[in-house]
Length: 130
Image 1 (tube, one colour):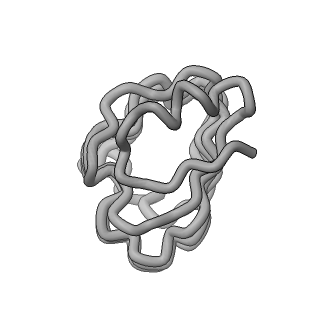
Image 2: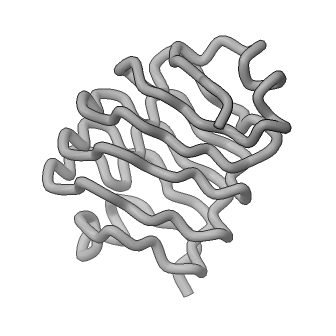
């Protein structure tokens, strides 16, 4: 079965809004430039979101990062200009974030138990507790 989504092995579902349960990794550039992708549902077995995985998804407005995600690589959501709300459910902030992970100023909601740890790190985004 497929456990990694990449732009080379998963071209038919590049505009899909649901990631199958057996996928652990969304590889770099997997959904890059999917301008019609307005909403996506990530599965609860996903662990890694790669570099520029959703880069330039110009219609993406909101996303929920499941608690299983431990790594979000730099620029994962770069150039998602209307992305305004991110629900990040992990209680430990994912690693790999940089100042270009989220290009726009967006609200990132985290569990109250993770708010202190998240607010002490610089991710280039506004991170209010949920």
